[in-house]
Structure formats: structure tokens, C-alpha cells
Amino acid sequence: QLQLVESGGGLVQAGDSLRLSCAASGRIFEDYAMGWFRQAAGKEREFAAAISRTGALIKYADSVKGRFTISRDNAKNTVYLQMNSLKPEDTAVYYCAGRGSPGTALNVRGYDYWGQGTQVTVSS
Image (cartoon, rainbow, N blue to C red; front, side):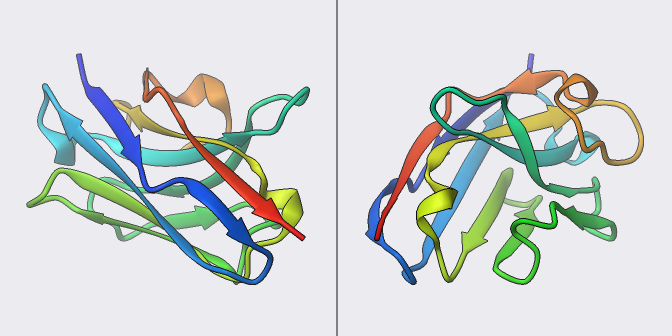
């Protein structure tokens, strides 16, 4: 099992920044591509960003492109999501996820392991 624990969420104002972290344990971290998803109240979980095992391939949802940056530090078994220029519509629970298959994935079914989530609330 790959255990994932997110941190860094909170309440911020529109235009502020936050950095989410996701610490992994239990398996060899660099064997997993990683993703960040988010789920707003009453909505389905949606893709935000993904990064391949080495970090060479990165993908973003159009809604966050240019504002969010995903990165990983394999020496620290951690994946990050730097979120800048936050908007009220970014309010959601943010989840990190691990994928054991090659390549990245843009949908929930492409991931095998999930964290418990961290709440991000952006006030206007």
C-alpha cells in the first residue's frame, strides 16, 4: 500500500497563494506517477494536475493552467501543488493520488491510491 497524507490547506483570500504537500510512505515513491484532484461541495472529483515518475511529464487542467504548479521531490517522497492567484472557485477538498501504471492519467480511475484530502477555502 502507498500511504498518502496531504497538508497545507487552509482559508485564504482571493489572489493569495498556498502550497499543498503530499507525503508518501509504504512503497517506493519514484515508482508512482502522482496527481492532484479536487472536489467541491456537491460536485464530482476533478483532475487538477499530474506529474510522471521522474517529473519529466506534467499535465494541468485548463482551469488551473498558469496558476498552479505541480512538482515532486523523490528524495523526500513528497509531491507538491503550488497554487497562486487563487480564486473562490478553487474552493474544494484537494486530494493527492498515486498511479502505479506507466504514464500520467487525467481521471480518477487512473489512480490506485488516495490521500484523505485537505480543505482549501478561498474567500472573495
